[in-house]
Each structure stands twice: as C-alpha cells, then as structure tokens.
Image 1 (cartoon, rainbow, N blue to C red):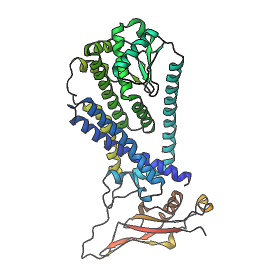
Image 2: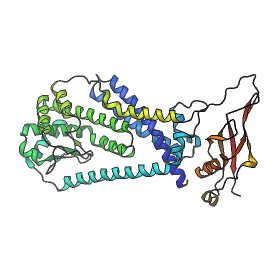
Image 3: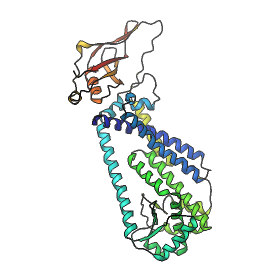
Image 4: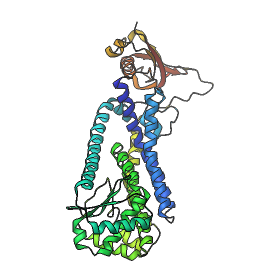
Length: 423
C-alpha cells in the first residue's frame, strides 16, 4: 500500500470520527442521564464503554480501509445524513476534505505526537520521583498498615516530594504514592491518612491502568470534545468510587470530607498520568461524602458535544443533495451520454505507472440540462487514490449530451467507467 493510500485511509477515518464521536457522546450522555440515580460504579462502567467505543469504532474503520475495502470511499455527509438514495457523495464539504486530507493528517499527527511526548514526560517524571525522592519511615509504616487493611498483596511505596500539592498514585506492578512535603508538615496526620486511604483505593481498583488508557485515547482523538467529556465523566465517577471505598475502610466519611476541604485550600498541580486526590470537583465530592444524594442533571456539560453535532449537521446541509429525477412510468427518459471525443485522455500518474498499478474506477457525474458537469462522485475506487483523482479530473471536463424526460433536457446523474492499464 502506497503512502498516499495510507494518508487517505487515516484522513477519512479522522473525518468520519467527527460524527461517530458525536453519536457515541450523545448516547453516553443519555445513558448517564437515565442512570443518574444509579451507583457510581454503574455510571463509571457506562462511561468507560463509551470511551472504548470512541477508540474501537475508528480503529475498526481504519483497519477495513487499510485492508483494501473501497466501500468506505465517499463523502462525510452521506453517512451523517443516513445515506439517503441519490445524495451526492462528493462535493461541498466532502470534496473540501478530500482535497485537504494530507493537511488534516499532518496536523493531527503533530498534535498527537505532542500529546504523546507530554504523556511520556509525565511517566518519566513519576518514575524519577519514585526512585530518587525522600522516604519517610513513619508514614511508610502507616501506608503498610492501610494496605493490609485494604487487602493489597503488593507492597506500596511512599515518597515525599517537594513542589507537589496533592498526593499522587502511579504504577500498577510496583505502585507508589507521592506525598507533598507540605502536607506531611502542615496537615494533621489523621486527615493526611484519609487522603492516603483514597489513594490506596485507586491502587486496589487498578485505576492507574484505566487512566493510562484514557490518556492514550485523549492523545489520539484530541480533536473531538466528546472524548474529553466522556473522559472527564470517567474521572469524576472514579473519584467518587475511591472516596466511598476509603470512607468505608476508615469508617468516617466526614474525616475524608474534612481532608478534601483542607486540600482545596492548596494550589493544585494536575498530573493526568497518575491518580490524585484532587481529581474531579472537590466541593462536589465533599458534599457527596457528607450528604450522599443522586446525580443531578447537568446539560451544560454536553453543550460542546451538541455544538459539534450541530456543526456536522450544518456541514451536511451545505453539501449538495441532488437526487435523481423521479420519472413517471409513462415517461420516456434518456440518460446523459458523454461525448468522448470532447474528453481529454486522463494522464497516468507517474508513480502508479512506475509501480504498474492498474484498476477500474467508476465515477458518477451530475449533468446539467445544458450538458455541463455540475458535480462528481466516486462510485467505485480503482484501489489507488491517484488513479481515481486523475480520472475524475479529466472526465469532469467532458461535454455530455444532457439527459431528457419526454424530450426535455433535464439535470440527471450518470456513471462513467475508466479502465487503467499500464501496458
């Protein structure tokens, strides 16, 4: 497969995820709204499934594209509009995307690379802190006691870190809890112990691995607000679950609430690669600990996703939607016919010719009543993007005998095939 074909496959996958992610986001929001009275574990599971769908759907589509299925060639708008019969598959926004796929893929790759490097830098920072930062035997003993109380089989390391504002948990096989030096010296020990219980709850649930996968998905699909919204919902529910576990083990929900209240007074540092006690809305978590209640509806959080959906629908509306002329059964209709003596012979792309790439491309043309080409659509790909584009460019300049209905010239679609043979 050529580089152009790979770019084409990735580009259309990214474009199609704009409506796919919106659909998954809306369905997830609806499910969470219906489950607002359910346990946090249930909402957490639903949000995780939604985020996994955001990854699985485009990944599956990309695999099919790279495996050579040309059935995915076509427009962004036709899928969004429900593939209505007769809607033009190219032109409008779809044609704009087709012409700029290279730029789209390039910009996506640069941003994804930046986010990946940031994630790697965070991992290296955590690893360095776990290796080189100071140990505190007294607090390590408290952590060991709490770990036994939580039933954790693996030893949990504790490190005291300067310049950190909130406890952070990292690692799965060899978990470590990074504790700010300021908390060790200023926070009452029984409150700091409550925060450590919260971190151990994350370790017991293996939340670090889920959070790491979240960061990978956010790095790959950063451009879609639904991904960030669902990911934030996962973190909110995860923090509430950890709060509930810690409060249950301590037997004092108000103690953890008071510890979070003290933590709120500090300036936070957000380390997205780790699980920290400052995840989510602290005031909401404090209220939930002191007075558990049901989740209230918050439609404002879904505004970015709904806005993305409206933008997609607006793009669909801007795409020409020319339907074939409906012909009565007693009408006499003739389809447009290309005047091939007026057509320029398509130029064989040099790279495709050098590699002996051959194929047959089927193109649709919307021919006006005057015989001019108003729009084009790729019906069946030759298997090579450069061959498809070369045929479309040349044949779009052809002159047609317009189609007629009862002898009257009428705008209609027609199809033309071109066979590429290198020898």
